[in-house]
Length: 330
Image (tube, rainbow, N blue to C red; front, side, top):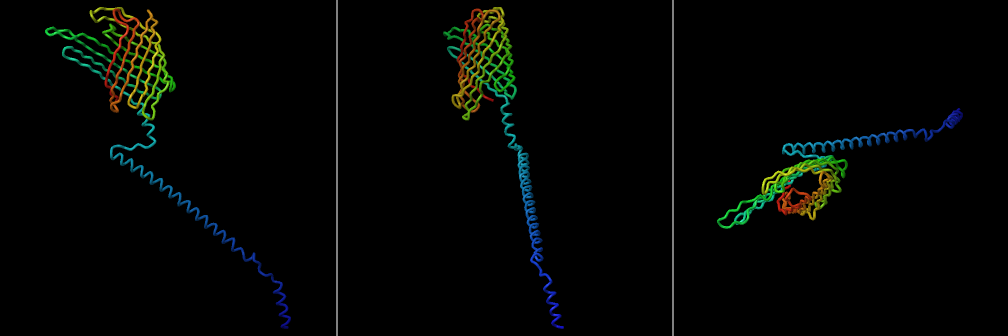
């Protein structure tokens, strides 16, 4: 009986399948999945921490900018952001460029001479407009040398003035159309008044300022000018003269060149060919050399030539003037 029972137990044990490794491995994928989930959570936490750090840095920058603006307001000079620099530069470019000049000669004693000259110009340039104003005036009296006991009367040697207003509408950076109006008088030359109206085209060939602050500028004009000239002889005797009209094409040039940083050469010239009435040619040229003494003050020497092919009766056709003056740039 015992042997039969043992035989039956052994047979049943042999028929029961042994546990396989696969039945014991399911725990490994679970552990791996748990490890992967932990790594992803750690990576997500690190990403959130980096984003929080970035937001904290941005907040710190904004706080620093706010503190800087607050400090500027307290000091009364609010700081402008870096982006405002181009606007400031553009604003500075569009401000008025003003120049004032003055010349004076006075002699007393055996001879007496008083000569005064003044000039003023202002120009404003924007993206689409150029507006300019120019004025000048000259006055002079002279008394010849005296002999003891005799008194000589002084005589007027210069009395003239002029004012011009010009507006350019810029079509491009190079080409513009303009209108000009003005008036002038010259008593010594028997011109009581000359009113001017002009319209034409201006070409700005170049306008440069080099790194060493030397400037270079060239503009030419092609226009039609009309002027009404009233004449009156003031010296030596007072006499009314016939009035004349002037009209025709005008050619002009304005040139500036910086020889050095502190020495500037200027040339302004114009030629007017009058085709109204009798043929007439008027030529004006002013050559100037200016030397900077300070940033705002300069010393200038100029040579002026005015030619009129048909001047008032009894007057010579060409006048010249050599002048020294101080100029102030505002």
